[in-house]
Each structure stands twice: as C-alpha cells, then as structure tokens.
Amino acid sequence: MSGSAVTSSGDQTRAPLTAATGLAFPTGAGGTHSVHRNYGTIWRRLLIGGVKGNVLFATDLARMIDPGNPTAWLLDEYMAFLIPRYYVPNPGGQQYSDTGAIAFPMCAVVRYLLANGRGTVADILSKVVGNGCRGDERLALYRGLSPSPYTDTDPRQVREMLHCFSQASWLDWDGHVGNPMGLILGAAPTAMQSYLLSVATPISGSRLRDKNDEVLRLGSVVPSVSTAAIGVPSSRTVNTAGVPPPPLPDDGFSGEEDIAFTEGKKVRIQHLRTERSDKLKRAFVEANGTPTRCEICGRKPLHSYPWLGKPNLQLHHKLPLSSSVHDLTTSVSDLVAICGACHSAVHAYYLGFLTRAGQEDFIDKAQAHTAYDEAKRKYVP
Image (cartoon, rainbow, N blue to C red; front, side, top):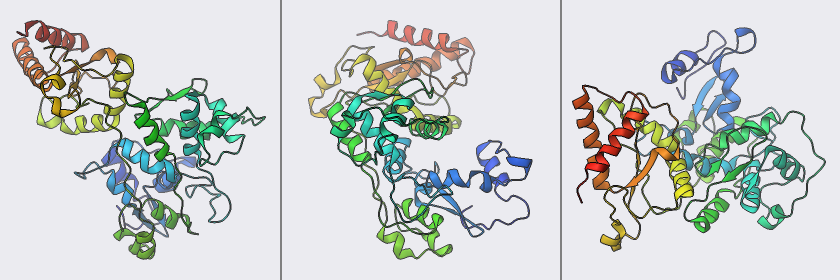
C-alpha cells in the first residue's frame, strides 16, 4: 500500500489490512475514524510507516520485517533495531518536536534491569522515570537509584510500552502491573549482557521537523525509494541509514522448531518460529541448563564431533507447533533437547503413529506426548 493516496471519502486502508491480517480494525470514536487515523500513531511509534500529506508510506524497517521477505528479520532483530531509536517525545505523538531534550525509555529500562535484575512498573516509574533517566547513563547509576516521590495515577502508557517490548525473547514479563519484569540471560550471561548493553545504547542523530520525515529517517535501513515519492530528500536517508541490529549470542544449542506435517502449514510454523523460538529456548536453558546429551539416544554430539564447538542439539516440541490442536502456549515441560537424527526419527514415528490411528493430526497434547514416549521406548541403542 506504500505510495497509495488516502482521501477524505471512504477508508482506503481498512479493506486491504483486514483482508491481509484477519483483524477487525475498529472504527473508533463515533464509528467514523479511518484506520490510518486510528492507528497512524502506532505505525509511527513502531517505525513502520505513516501518512504524509495524503500518501501512505512504509519504511525500510517495515520491509525488513515483511514475512514475504526471504531474509526478513526475526522479532528480536526488530526489537534490537527499534529500542535504541525509540525516544520521547516520540514522532508518533502529538508533542513531538525536533528541538529540546529527549529520553530513550526502553534503553533506560534495559539498563535498569541489567543493573538490578528485575523490576515492577512501579519501580520503573519511581526510580527510572522519577529520577529523569535518559537511557545513556552508566549501569552504576541504575544500581544506586533511590525511589522518588514521582507517582502516575494512570501508568497505562508505560505499561503498554513495556508490554510491547517484552515480546523480545530476552525480556520476561506477563503484563500485570504488580509483577516484576526481568531479563533471560540464558547460558551465556556475559555475552548476553554485552549484547543488551549495545541494544540499550541510544541512537539519535539530527532530528527532522516533520514527524513523518523523522519516522522515515529512524526507520531507514538502506536508502529507501519510498522517501523520494513523498518529498523527503534521499540524501537524508542515505546519511542516516540505520545499521542492521547485532545477532543474539549463540547459547550453545539449536532451537529449531518442529517440522510441519504438511507443506500447507509452513506459514503458521514460520509465524510461530518468529514469535516464540528464542524465548522458549532461553526459558528451557534457564530451567534445565544448557543440554549436552540427547534425551533419546543419550549421545553427546559434541563428544563425537568436537570440531562443532557446541552441543548441536535441537529443541523438540512433543506436541508439534504444526498441530491444529496447539493452543499457542508451550510450557518448558513440553520441550526436550534431542539430536538431529532423533528429531527426524521422532517425526517419522509421529506420522506412522497417526497413520495407524487413522488420524491426520493428534487429538490433544496427551496423545502427542504418548507418541513421543513410545518412540523413546522403542529406540534401540
């Protein structure tokens, strides 16, 4: 839709977005607001697009997270790009200005968590916001922050910001105001701390007066052809092009998701891999330590292949993500670390199990666990 004109008659954005996402896109106040009127603030805050004049635009960043892009970034890469560029007053809001002081709230939150381990919304409001943290201070300052008299009778904006960014695999929070959020450092905490400190280092540059021009600048990954179409000089984009985010440190084993039963389910698997693989992997490591031995055959791949330098095990979901009965929630107890050979063999056993039962899919999680346990028992050393 980038480059499409929007007019005061009708809502040119609703039908395409509804068709593409399956979401309702409520009309808002009085039932008259267009989608781009209701959601333009969100698009700008997330650096994915906006409307300049009467023309819709998508940023380079939006193209980098497009699932149709064969080299699309995963969620962690998107967050690593967004966090150091997310400042307030934000170009997504009404109070944006290209002059005056700015702060990087998520950089400040990550630094606070690196220094203190965990914290609630109240902690962040009192200590981080109340003490005027900008997000570029040394960790020692965040360790010594004292509670301030700052209070916010409606912490909704801070809570929603944290809820959005807590989708990163290394950030753990269930969204309830009173519960603490914390970091999942996995099996390589020193490397993760270094990575997160780089993510929490503000990136600003010279701000542009028009908020939509500023969104294009911040969301620029490579020189963008879309900027010229709406009157933003391409030289600005070239001069401020963003650097792709750093990769997450390798924590020692593969978090490959389960293979799909059929080709037609690849889209769902890709979505779930993008949204949940890294967080599940780190939660598994936090609960069990880094696995070194296959749960089925008992072998240690690193012992047999020392040149690999890591255990080379894969994370297996006893109930495959491709199953239609999967409810999109996974507990650590659903996961096991197995070698690649056993992983392929287990899925072959699943297919035989279902064929013998006259089924195309498991009827529930318990049946999938039964099939896994059978395969494990029938393994011959």
